[in-house]
Amino acid sequence: MKSRKPKSLRGEKAASLRSLHLLKEQDGQAGLEASTLDQTEKTAVDLPGKIEEIENVLHREKTVSRGLKEVLHRFFTVQHLYERIGRSRNIDEIMDSLLSVAERVLPFRTAAIYLYDQTTGELLLRAERYLDDRCRSIIQSHFDEGIIAWVMSEKRAVIIPHLQDLTQDSSVPSTGFVIVPMLAANYKIGVLEIWHEAIPEIRGSMQLEMLELLAKQATIAIENNQLYGQLKHAHELLKKSQEQAIHAEKMAAVGVLASGIAHEINNPLQVVLSRIQLLKRRLQEEPFKSSLTSAEKEALRISHIVGSVLRYAQNQNQSQFQPCRINPMVMDALILAKAKLSLQGIKVKSDYAEDIPDLLLNTGEIEQVLLNLLENASHAMKSGGALSVRTCIRDRHVYIEIEDTGCGIPKEHLARIFEPFFTTKAPNEGAGLGLYVCYGIMERHRGSIRVESTVGVGTKFTLQLPLPG
Amino acid sequence: MKKILIIDDEPGILDVFREILQEDGYSVITAENGVKGLARMEEAAFDLVIVDRKMPFGDGPDFVERIRERKVPIKILLITGSPAEPLPAGIDGYLPKPCEVDELQKMVGKLLEC
Image 1 (cartoon, rainbow over the protein chains, first blue to last red):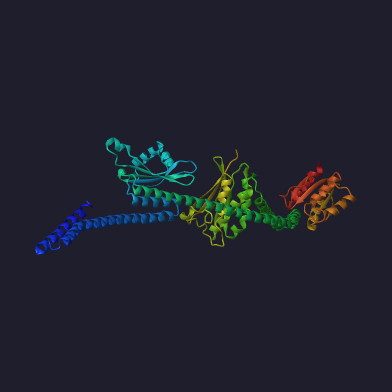
Image 2: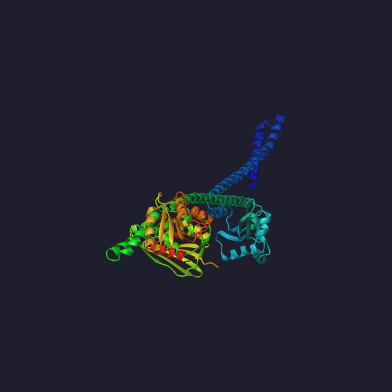
């Protein structure tokens, strides 16, 4: 088509030049300057050729220029898409960008991205466009027949014609899959599967190359994302271990301090308690008896509080697991939290299951969890309320339930409360690590921590610990 | 009459323990630290010594070690304000501070009846 136009142009120009030549012959000057005429004739004869030649060159240049423009346009499109993939922040966003971009490069019928589960090695669907059951089963057959493994070893995009089309029509199948491997430097990331309607047209095309480039870019983005995730995780671990080290140092100091204070309190307390009890024996009549009974009760309460502080401080420095009784531990935590709870007008109800066997625990850590939950409960019931603490045994597990009638936790916060640094408290009231640490402690004990909450009704935390054996 | 030596740096404790144990019919002598306690033991024989764990000038474990070195046939009851700390070898019983009057009487009775 394109070559016809210059041919016809060439014909018209040649005809007009011939007419000009005839006019010159008719005005009577013919033969006067034979040699000049010959020369002119010659020039006139060559001119159409020259014009044709120039026109051909111009046309070729136009075509090249158009091609170049097209290539440049594609280059900028790819560059833009590259950037879009590279800027994507998480894997889902990268996958979504890759599919959108792939659709612009090669309008497809269906596309899907499968990523390897790096622990099981299984290929899992991560993102798709227009994927129906039929396509899904065809893609599954690629997995089952080892096609994916082959594509991975080829390390390039491969076209797999759809065999069903072959059987229906003996000619070359028009539909099929383009499978683009996504390979990182040392491991396989996944595959991009595209079902295209005109497979013969894209064989060896620039579109195929572009798809490979885009998949490569997405692979790099995923790799970076994973590396960033690993770095973030390592950073969090480092931060956590730093916090633990600081906490351990602090608790060691608190332990020494508490032990000293306990000793200093216990000496005078021994005198007070013994004197009260001696007097009580001697003064049996009222009102002395009831007054002394009350004084004795309070002196014993001081003794329990001092004992709890001492045990708590000592347990914090105890990093080993040892057999321990759950109920006394919960009672100790309640004694420590009771002052604050009663100041806020919170009524405490407790119900302890009998015959709970000793559990192998890091007592300091479990006490830390209990105190944390009691502290949160008191925070949630600033204008009073009721706190229920229960222990029970169900399905080979011990459960500790701490339930408050506080403000409750909004649904959107509920899923995030065990995340590090998640807090709704004011900056000086907490770093958002309390529940995160609790979660880690319960995991180390092969147990769990669960939360149920309704805004305006209250919150229930349930700790689950496995029974021994 | 059974004789008891009480060693504690807290005068209030010495007084009240003496009162309790004297009411139970024991003969009670007191000392403010381990060094003075050893001196009392040079002067008389005792059936039981009640000794505080933490004291200036000869604390409880140090006192217990010296007594056991001398192979003196005496019962030793340690009273401690830091119950979680490991107990020294050679004692016959211990009571955490603060202990109740009943607990003290029962423990002393038990140690002296054998």
